[in-house]
Image (cartoon, rainbow, N blue to C red; front, top):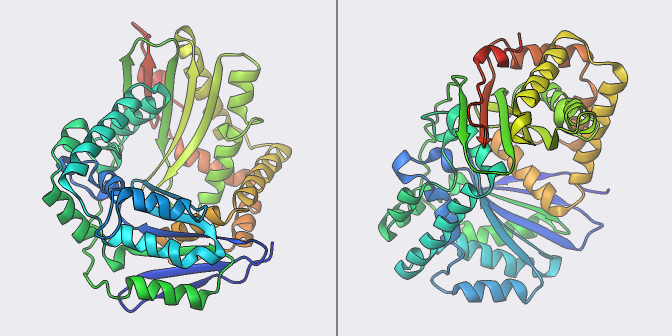
Length: 423
């Protein structure tokens, strides 16, 4: 895949611009990234970052919500946005010739939202429905409950959507105040990948964002502390949902590649130990997988399984067994290589689209003070040894480190802490 070097630029007002030219495509993906997310909210304003993201699509000084939709539809573009714990993103994918219009719409959305009171009231109903939907989606809910308990009383533990109470308390004045304080040039990154010329993109970005001048306030983050806990919540469901997890590494940790490999061989693929032993050999769960969440100063390693109400105890024991096993014995060379190849393959396939490369560039800018080429990442994965995996497993799963959340009809289920001891 022929790409030219990545170019990083900073405008006079502090806004950062990163581009990567791909000569063999006709599209451009461009995103405006905000380096603030739900962890930067106070508890009583929970969900305001996500709510503002919704409001930015409701119209600007010049364009109604319908105008925005028609402008993008008329050029066959795809416009979307999301809010995460540490950032938010607004992005468009268009044919290269439509880049000026795409950036025109994007800059209008993230600079001139109308915040009309009627729209705010209507959007509250929409977001409250979104919150109810999580309550009705048990595999989402169990992760939400796990996270709330895991990072208790910390912004990382709070739901991105907020709560019904916080959302209903939002006013035009509150939203406008948040927007003015947070959407400042020092908090903004524009990332663009595709059939483009850096100088031209810079010109377009300069014209639309160059006059933004408000100063950014410090992030004021504090790392969370984790106190492992066991939560069992009864809910009338056909199936029980289970989350087990422990602390993991922050984004820029030196052992991150070893933790990716460990995650892949434990529960990150179809040939992983958990998938093979819990699902394939015993048929105890339809879905079982592990995942890593990494933030600026914290991380978590979680294992999820959906199983019958009767099988919860057995699944817990099997998971604990697998964690013990990976601490006690070195991973066989063939299994390690399979995990590395899976990881490298999915990474490379994932970076074939302009949109995923655009996201990758922005995330690197957010978390690292430099940009990593794909080759460097692949090399980092390839260098992981069996000893690294075993050492990282011992580091992440010390005795007494596991938290557990169970959601389902499990009346009377007991999980004493010693049952979770990965020793």
